[in-house]
Image (cartoon, rainbow, N blue to C red; front, side):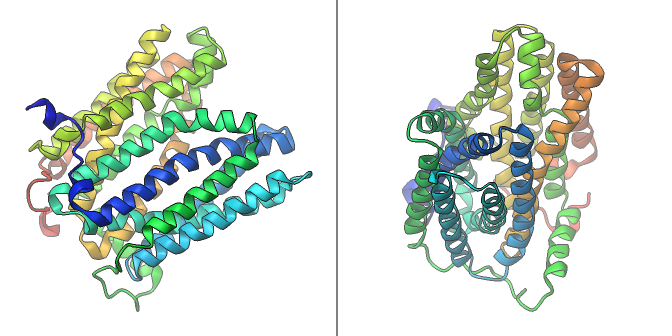
Length: 420
């Protein structure tokens, strides 16, 4: 394979005008949302001086986001997805503007922050499912993998540079400026997405009860071996090998560092993920997509195990960089396989289930990591989780042949054959 085939494929940006609009909007909001992710924690802590309140606001936002994602998945398969995306982003812009005004006032109101967290989480969830569902309709089938890789790359870039920019702005103009910039970012995104054509799903689900509609999406996931395997294999990684909650303890008790070391630990996976996304061109050309996915999740598990056993800062950072490469490769392949094997009429609901798992899985994984660290210590706790992830991935590879045989270049597996 030539070097040019390894670098990320930008074909969707060259050939698909509608996708360019989505990519531009997503790039803007990923960067500006990173400001709010940092600013909201600082803001709540400034108001209350309590880390418990910071955690509660995050919990409220996560719960609202989960509900919004599930409801958004149903709506995305029965209404014009363009209108849903535009409406949700417009509302989020208004909420962010309200947060900016509240933060700039002499006596910021905590209750307003909670209300904003509920509204922003629920509405962002409504639009998130629709945005993911429209990608396969905006690009040619040959470009689905590349389109997902480009979106993933922007997310990782935002994760790398966004927090640092947020820190600079928050320490200067203040957190209100972070919220205001994010609101402007959403307005810019709405302006870009306004030019999209109508994106109504190929479905006649409008008369079906919403719960029955959601159940149909779940039934499809259970009945399709590839899609089911994608969700199951990701659970092993998220629940048992998610070390982020232990970074402060690892830095303090194992690696002998302080806050600066914690920052490096958080940065290393994002750097690896960005590099993995930058050199992801092969993912759309490699024949055995399912096997590549399994291998990438194994890379994550092995790297996290090695991180837990490293005991040395630079070795630990190297392990996390490699883990980031495996993680972003896995995400690119999972996203592409999910969209390739899901019919358009179900894209919204299946996307919502995938995003809901991505929202809840890390929270469960953080709790599991904390329990493992209490029982075994931070290093062994992380390593044990990595080993469980490796064993789980091997189990999935052995018991789900449909996932092993998945190929992005071929036809999707028919539903009746997907139970093999």
